Image (tube, rainbow, N blue to C red; front, side, top):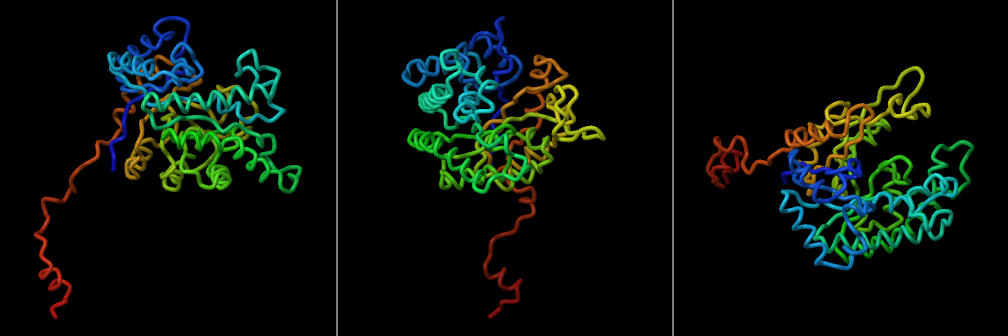
Length: 352
């Protein structure tokens, strides 16, 4: 067993043009003042990291780590979710997702994908130069418009979609292997990897690649009605990063997990600040600890009610309270007996 590292904070949702939320130093000082020991950096926000520079310069990376160390925090990993999302985009989503891309590649799906793949490559190299071992991301989606099988999906469509998704990602997984980085796909609606079964389908297509892993976030599992605790038991060997995020699912006579296309505040399935939802975090931390989870407990704040500042303040304390300091002794050691093989044989009636 290992003691989970933390608390840490994904700073992406807190970025702002006003201090202290517009610089890495300011964000680090603020996070540290709340009790966070680590921060996860959004790889798409140049206010906090220049990915191209980090991929090329270990001096830049060392300076960044030193700046954070002086303020009492360290980098847990990079979040490359936007870049990962744009590696695979169904044409129906082109206009919708173009806003995530830089202006020079909008309206050009091929150029947008090339940009995203190049960005992912830079994120892998930057992670290595920063001394990190994991990289969080999304898989992107070619099949999401077809998730519900009516009318019947054409035979072979799903298999073809996962084959193509694997073709896109396999070179990046190989590069990550060379750099010693685990790519951790966040299991998330709108991605082709949105539950355990789809992760397994993708894993099979990449031949069980050792660098194909999971960013565990119970909020996206609870909102689907999935058993997020058993998920840990099943996939713990592949869970290398996690987002500690709360949510709730309160279906009624008008809506269920699809939530009737309502805004977040009115959805039956919605995200909440830590401690305000339905997630059993005591059991989550217990299971992650039992299975030797090697990473950080990273708070990803998303809430339709509470302010991010209040959510962050409460989140650091919440995670600290739930981290289990693993024991190095057995509780009944005081009643232990002397090891004696002859006595053991006698107790079992093996006297001959």
